[in-house]
Image (cartoon, rainbow, N blue to C red; front, side):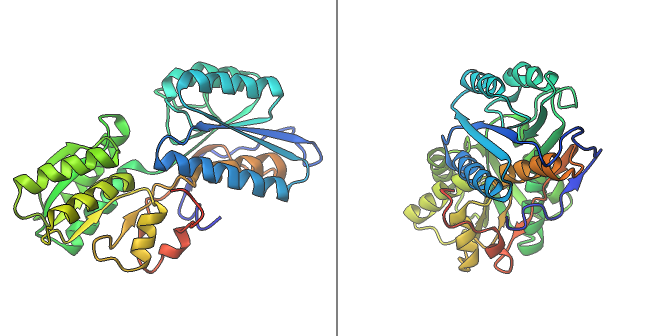
Length: 314
């Protein structure tokens, strides 16, 4: 796996007791269905890493289940528990509705790794290990790049959905621009959807005759942003910044596309990191409990190849 754990922080470590390498072990992986680009990447990396781990460990079985909504995911978790699993790696479709199902598995003695989406009570009563990207840093890294590269830029922002993750990203972005000359002219929600981002960008291009930078917070939305800019024939926008690390945007950075000079990681490959850490704890007695937060790395032409997965759907 390419540089997926670089710069991460591991806290409150402990080991999975009573498990030896000689035992046959089963890991259940419960993830959302591929309903948009980022979750398609989650499914790809979960299946890729499951195959890799089972090749590496003869006595390991990894079962991957996808679910479109919290109710079906709760059923999937119950099905995994009935099959008999030693560990559960779960990226919830919506965390709070799934807390009871997750806690029930944990109370049966199963090691639980929670990925990305944390419930309100994200503590060791719900999970043993938490693996996630750094949402405040995703915004901060984008803001810092704008301030350093175009210190007098006129900027418009396309946010995601009005949920805590979006607010964390926006707060990080705003904090990075405090005290600078960057002018953030407007913020609108694009719902992490390329069609909605296309419409928001059209609105911005109509309102503002001069825009230097668009921060779209998410690579799916950047697709719609670029389409709107091209359709309008505007040449004043110097560049667009997204986030997440989609293969299309990483490739644009690799190729030196002036409209996409950088990207900020919030990689779907984090599901693979969570699976590898969980299995390492089970099979190799590596201490793996606590919180493991991945860096929001700035992807540049110099390092982009490290994060490029050409076979991924995202």
